[in-house]
Length: 299
Image 1 (cartoon, rainbow, N blue to C red):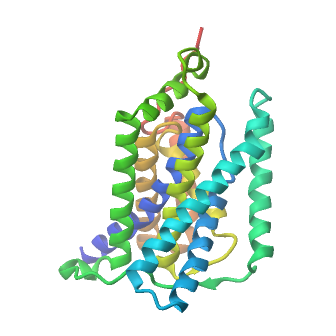
Image 2: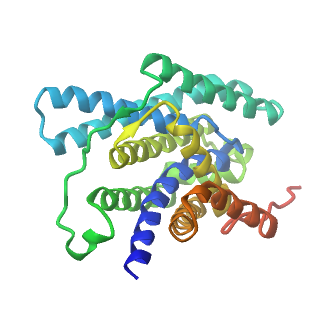
């Protein structure tokens, strides 16, 4: 039973990261029906930003918690700026174009950001400092580490804050109106351009939180970490029902547990196979995802 709980908390930890990134995918898709393939690279840029800031602050002798807070804030701001800029440069000029055009633009932006970071930094793996302090976990210590607890708590707080923002704020209501019908939202005075920009900013900020936490948890980063993480998070978003924020969270957790239990009880060689096999099965038997709604014909 100890082994089961160890796998359970391991899956919860990685599923929390998938959920943080998947929310960005699903928010953008819900608003403008675009799969933002560059979202994984925003996650990677957040991790690199935190690495640079943490290195400078460590050299200046800052305490560990201050380094974590400042590095996380810098990563959020920098990644949000990248998300905002990517939307303005790569997607906004293509609104109204055939759906394939922004999709190709997203793939191109993803490849550009990967190569940009590789040339600006290094193609090799870099060590990432352990920014999260040790916590007195008692009996839980044998199942999960302090960094895992930080990741789960950060994900829970971020997702709860986002849910409250979407439900109860004026801008959250504007986002829901735009997701339902952007033209009608414009007619009633919603600034759709501002809503779309804010969607990219929020999604990028959440991805940056995930990038910093998982980099500190794993202890190393390189320019390709966003590719596979982004692909898995996209899988989680589709699994939960793309366009649904609760679905993205649930999809991330289901994917994390699937990988963890498959790795623990079958073989680590098939970790990715089980993840994508689950996606195929969901798409066959429930194409709209676990919490997604079947598309309706608008008249």
